[in-house]
Image (tube, rainbow, N blue to C red; front, side):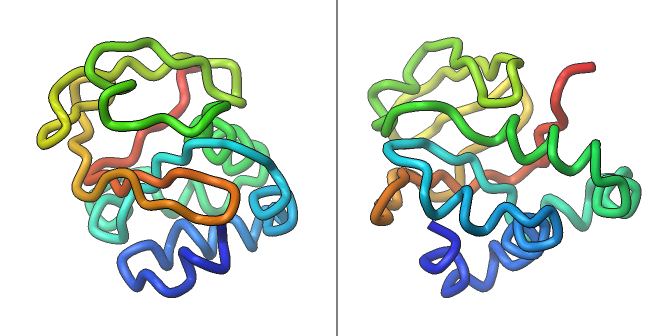
Length: 130
C-alpha cells in the first residue's frame, strides 16, 4: 500500500508518517484493509499536525485510527460505523459520490485499489478519540 501511495503526491505527509512510525512493512503486509488517508492539505490545516508527527504514541494511535479491516466499497460506507485498528469507531454516511466520515471529513477520491488495501483520500485529519 505505501508503495502505491508514494506515487500520489497529495498523500506524501501520510506516507512520511507511516515511515516515521516504522510501519511501512506493517501497512504493506496487512491483508484486506481499508485506509482513510488525509491529503497534505488536511495536515496543513490541522492545528495539531506538528505535535502529532513529533509524538510517537500519538502517531501510532493516529495511524491505527485510519485503518479498518476489510476492503470497503463506497456502498459499504453509505451508512456504517466501522471499528478501526486503533479501537475507535469511524461513522460513515453518504452516497458513492459524497461520503462523509465522522460528520467532518469528506472523501475526495474513493475506492483506490492497491495490492492489499482499498484507499480513500480525505480532506480532513481524523484524530482518534481519546
